[in-house]
Length: 580
Image (cartoon, rainbow, N blue to C red; front, side, top):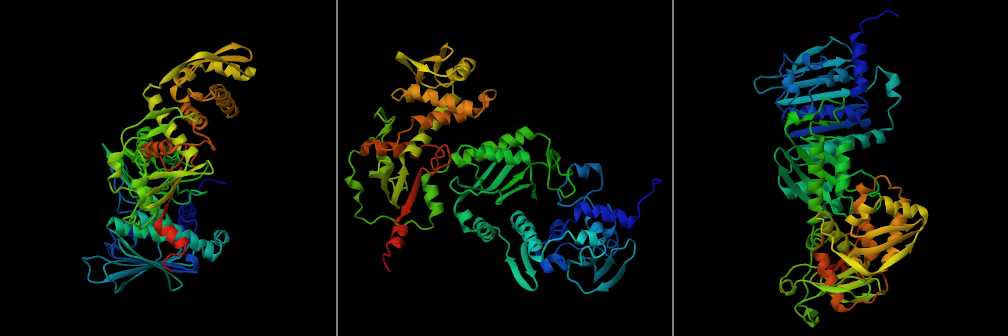
């Protein structure tokens, strides 16, 4: 065939394939136009999951009579004029293709009025180019657009639509994303004349969290913390879930760049890295985050649906997000966790038995199962303060848990998980400062290994030295250990070294081990932490509680398992039906 220019209608229908996939994508484009027009109230009426009809009414600036026909022309927009505008996009829409594409595959009616006009004007299009009717109509300031019978003239596309329920679910997800990004807008949504959402504007933090609770559930609100940080031209704010709250799928993750929701691999990796030490297995955190930077530092023109962006300095963005989130997670205190997960904390009665605890002025911390202990700072000042802490030990349960009492009620602590987190954070700090305290063994330990393990020791000698081990190869199946981190001096370090070698080789990290120092430190901490069925004195248990309180990420161990759980008096009263 000869080269020829496509028919305008066919060209628009092809373009619609990029922008108009289903009713949800139509609604997204219409809502973005309303938001760009400065609307503070948006009403949405849906029929048949949006397939039969979508009506969006807003109180934005409106469109003049002269501009109404242009609104349906391809590459026509009021949002950019020149290349400089494209490099500094501040609006959600800017391509000028949405209405042209939508009108080529649906019946569209648009009515609008500006503040300068005495009456509104209405224009209708039915899948044709250049054919329209425009008549005056009564209309308040703002715009109403109706989209009916989606894909009525492209039956092949209509066949790919799903059931009404499925399409409605897709629409609800689009609405969720906009409900979070524009707290200042009142959204009213109906389907088949039945109200789905009626969400007032949310300006205060409490109002915003109430809106989030309506969409994500109160559990997310109760198990998340608000964050806010900025540096130079970068700023981030929003809510991130506590490590204790996680999901099997990344279905509660909303990230906005300059008010635009995006799905970006770099951002996903940055967030995942921040949660690396605190999430269990392959669980996913929840978050609603707003990232802002100058428009000229981000390119939003890299995808037809504008879901992807490209940063000018991706490394800077990545590191800023990771460090901010990691620092926020590390600063979470037991008080915050208790207050967030329990809406009301009932104080202990006046006859509290706390005064029965002995020697609370100074507590030791257990360093190993063999009772190798060191002193820590006096904790008497905290005893006199009405703070929610991890409390004071009452005893051990089955040699696994520490039972403690605080002013909120009862706390159970997994002593191995707790000690593991304490040791891990200490080792990380020492490693980062190149100050791992070591202990030279009076008698070197000879360890029998296989050839692969001996090769590994020889190859990674410098890394082991950085981690506090002086480990050398003696023969094809023998290595000698002469020095260990001081935290491990009373442990079976020979067995521990064999376990570490086995773990690292099994994970096939021989060529990437320098990128996994934290994982190795976590393995060391896990092997060194106090084990089940180890009897601890009250002094040692309280010492561990005090140390855990002053440790970052203390709510979970290195593997993401909880280290402690609060049971308030309210929880216990409900269980035992007190007051019923």
